[in-house]
Image (cartoon, rainbow, N blue to C red):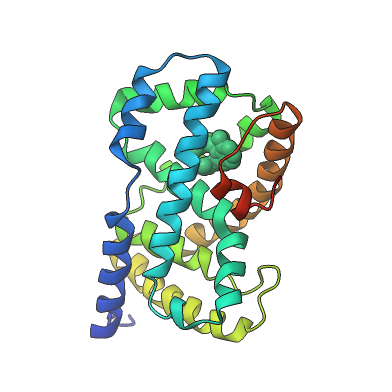
Length: 233
Ligand SMILES: Cc1cccc(C)c1Nc1c(-c2c(F)cccc2F)nc2cccc(C)n12
């Protein structure tokens, strides 16, 4: 039986990633509005837009704290953020959905999402993904590492130095692999299941682009930050 051991520097890396992941949460005022404002499709869309905007801000702050990220080529940093934003946000909102939120909030958020001008065909894959993430019962370290691994995907559009990104991603994958083996000794396939979610995540990019287009068709307004990260308007 191979003795799995997380090295000192890997423990330090995990602590930095976890602190960064927990330091930035959705502002409480947005979460509070979730329960207060009325339920019109317009109101819901406005609230979700505010949530999405704060999720992008949280994502940028988290990414800046990934060891090595700020030493990457600056244009590659932007390409990685733009290329991974949707996937990282689906991951975070899946975790908020399945774990973080107090009981009542989850149903309210689901109701608002279901009535915000998104067509049924995008709802199903979105909620299926939320369910599949919830079933994994990931610990926080796994969630934070999986998000960092998603952001450090070398083959995003316009990334020039893919090897530099690969090296950072590989060190995260190695820590996650060991952590999974230690956290889930009875489930040798657990690490593979986590990586399988990253494949499912990629399919959601397509749905998200369609959602943006259909919102814009109905003349929905986004915030400047959302327009910038997804090159709309
Ligand atoms: C905040 C939120 C939570 C769950 C579902 C949805 C639809 C949202 N809202 C948006 C998302 C988005 C996201 F923020 C996380 C996950 C998946 C997403 F579709 N992306 C965008 C882009 C422009 C406007 C909005 C309202 N929006």
